Length: 117
Image (cartoon, rainbow, N blue to C red; front, side, top):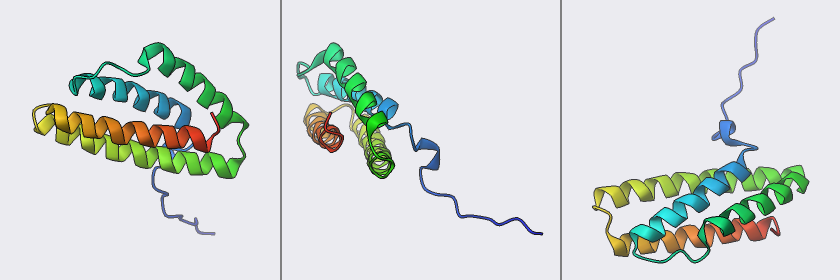
């Protein structure tokens, strides 16, 4: 009897790890805001509080919602990494950092709303 092969799913290793990734993205946002020359709107303590709320909400969510959050978190992580790389190549341009910070903040807020956290 032969083994059945399944095509690998994109970001399969990241599924179920959304709360940790979201906390890391929130920390990345704080760093990018500093590069942009901004004072952090929320600060590290608020980021930790949000991470805890998201972790609880994620754990209580239906599996279909968890998979949706997993996929959106992986997508957000990918474009955030590309944005940081571009920012690095641009020499840490404050206007570019501000735009990345705004986009990342909006994405994180949308993900938190999806979980009602």
